[in-house]
Image (tube, rainbow, N blue to C red; front, top):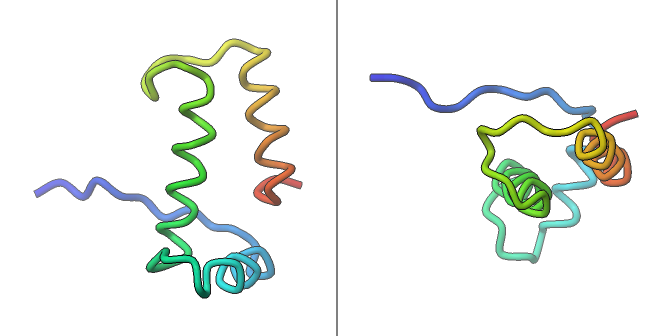
Length: 72
């Protein structure tokens, strides 16, 4: 059986903020929220997840992740 999940490390302060944000939101966990946000960000590119990003798309994606607090 293949495990289809990986562990991603984020700063603890960000994780705690996410937990506060989702307290009464209907998300079952911070992981569920993070997966939702990342899928939403990726869907904005209009491409399948398996395709490579152009330099401009990658720059835009990184900026969005910075704005969400995922990147410094």
